[in-house]
Length: 174
Image 1 (cartoon, rainbow, N blue to C red):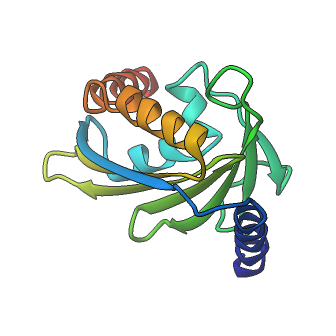
Image 2: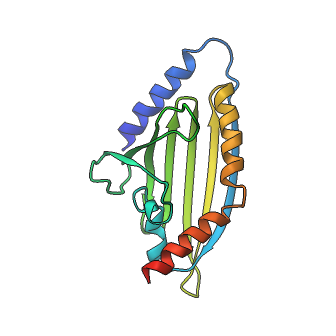
């Protein structure tokens, strides 16, 4: 897993250094906590890259490694880009801790890098809180524009849309 991450980071750094002039990278970060109507054992797996399809029907990942799509640290997936004309995004599971209910994705696009950190915590009434933190770094002017637009779009309703969709999926599974 560390080997894959080092290769991707080296590639990213070399592409940044190959451009002329100083970097104009920008970073934005936002977090939100949502409350979900299920135990942490039912909720946490729904943040897996394949299981997300159960609540987000537009989600369309393609497993790269392993091709089974199994969640594990070092797993790699691809998705279509999020904006018109965007190249595919590469997702790496950099943390997958089932015991601590903690998951982190690193997402690489041609002009941006995104970290999505998800921490689930049980509540006493068989409910779960999920704290989701997006950290987005634009690598050039276009990447900066995309990250500002994308973070505003994702957090437009403070992830309440995620809460509603996940709770609906949990309700269907009962």
